[in-house]
Length: 92
Length: 426
Image 1 (cartoon, rainbow over the protein chains, first blue to last red):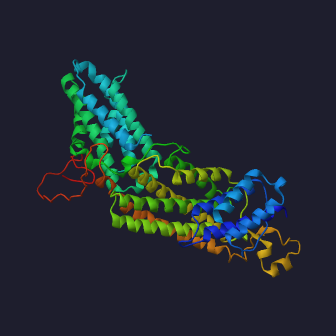
Image 2 (image 1 turned 180 degrees about the vertical axis):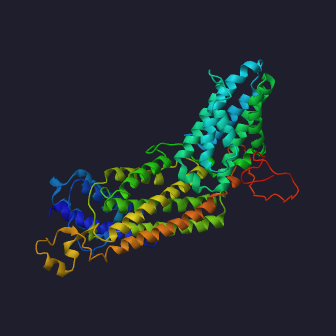
């Protein structure tokens, strides 16, 4: 499984957490939509996601994805990198 | 961007100018007028039919449109202009068929009356020419048209205003909320009704976009109540229902990580991004127009939501989604030694327990949205009666009331062209 695929798996977990959140402390739905759009961009790049079991929080999952991509920056499309960084900042 | 109200203003102005036209030689003016009526009758007939209110004029409009009362040649320019405006209204209503139907009878009948009022003024102009110019057959037809539409022309303009007046004409993808909604609905409809194009992203993103529409509409409804545009109690009920719908659609958008349906849905991604920007970006219109546009967006979302529910139910029932091998029971891996634990396989028909909640969530979200749309209808309906009219300057428009005429057993039979108005009997 590629680094992008592993990161994709973490992003899927984060997206699920962000959208399923309810209550006053839940992040705005727009943040979940940004995460979904990042997933679609990875689909368009024909990246197959790894299955990552739920367990981490949304911020933890995004941090895990960012850490993976950080180790392989030369192979990561800049658009994916910048979108992920924006999400990390929003969900921090 | 023209609205129905803008086109109606133009229509009434054109009819008024026609009536003011000085005619020195009625014999010469009659045929150009009748040629103009061929176009006006056809365009008006089409526009009125979209409203499905009354068909009293069908026969007389058909008679004018078929050209039997006119000789070949150039039509009167003012009547030709009227026909173009009727055509524009017809186009706009055809493009807004869903919202026209959902607007309710009262709104449709008021718009219907506005068009009848213009027809009345124009018919009287030509009737005078026909009477002076020796056109008895034409005069008979135009007199019928004028009689049937008489009462509509007597309604004060403010009492004819309605929710549909604010519907704007815009093309899909244009930089307006309506354009963005139309573009999104077209892209979503493609994805949700085609087994080859549907993806997990498509289903999730549509659900998330509907959640955003509901969330923004809830906030705008509250804002309208604070501004005194709508009844605060009705607005509170509608906003609460919209917030519940937003939460329900958010849940429908949240898929568990072990399920997926891959593929590219690029067009929907672009359309959804444009919708997000239109919903949450700077407001290009005033609060009443914005609330009306959001009301229309909720109506569109209700239809798209139904398509989402149907597709989700079909996929979740078995065989449509993919599942992570790692999330399947050990028995599956034991019986499928070739399946990589890190891979994805079509969801076995025997293992749909984890996908069925998707269908349940989609159904709950659809129900919540239908309820919210109904409450929003109630909250938004009186907006014209409570706001200053941009066209008339009135502080409070008259509110329509349906009045049942008293029964007169010995009264003569009412002819089909009797001057009864849709939604009101005076």
